[in-house]
Amino acid sequence: MIALQKVAKGVGNIEVRDVPEPSPEPGWVKIEVKAAAICGTDLHIRHDKFPYWPPVTLGHEFSGVIAELGEGVDDWQLGERVVAEPHSLACGKCWLCRTGSPQICGEKRSPGWGIDGAFAKYIVMPAHLLHRLPDSVSFDAGALVEPTCNTVHDVLERAKVQPEDIVVVMGPGPIGLLSAQVAKAGGAREVVIVGTPGDAELRLPVAEKVGIDHVLNLVETDPMEFVMDLTDGRGADLVVDCSGAQPAINACIAMVRKQGRMCQIGMTGKDDISVTWDAAIFKGIDIYFNISTSYTSWDRSISMIEKGKIDVESLITHREPIEKWEEVFDALEEQQGIKALLIP
Image 1 (cartoon, rainbow, N blue to C red):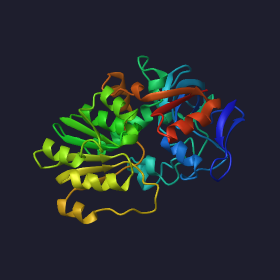
Image 2: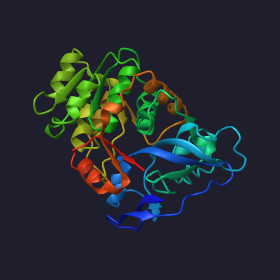
Image 3: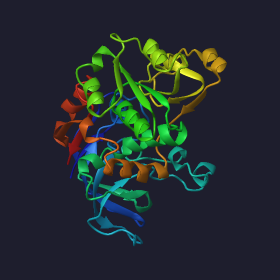
């Protein structure tokens, strides 16, 4: 079968290769991939800025149907529509796994970087990581369940959106657009999303399309002034940084109210940055750093997508065969796309 692989360490080194079809070991299933979405992680691996073990097939955001059952799998059937948590090979024994956080187990080797992923016709996954995809949710939408789960876990479960909160999201990329929708679905009174001139052509119009209350281009509207006017000078209840940019992170600290909450999702890609730490201390804010997804975020996300509370399909800008991976990766890096699907 054809697979898109990172074949060696270093910048680049990504190739479409003909590889053997995988077979499920006991307790695992073989899934025929129907759609797989490109994540920022895949782009980071392209540039050697995320851990990986080559040669490895990329891709961890996907939907598909069960094509083969491994020995001992008796609670799933052939042909079932599924998505899957990317927590393969978590040990199940450490204190993190035992307390319900296998997503940050040190032994975890997720598909797409630790084991072979979804940019191929077939992928194998542990059966206990599967979730059923309703018939009413398309495979394209199903491929975006995983990034939606990230935002549900980060914004709702950890940073805890409260009814009538004023929420500000910095960065209208895929995670920012999902975070803003999740905050609204979680009960926020008003949601503000802030972008740059580079977002004006594509991302900000999509933010308006999916119903974000206030869509700001920071060169046209001062976000600080806008938020202070909106909150009678108090500041936002929750700020969510999805950009990883130092100015945005410090703007979040400036815009949040005293004893408010800050949810940090965006990675900086740097060893260290300058942060207005004392300003955060003097405000007494709670800061939540986040990575990956929880078990509970999956069924919540699937339900929210199924019921139309979150519009994921409006984020899809590319849908191409695996062989066209390079032009799609380039488009995403040049901000000429939002979410892109590779179809085996």
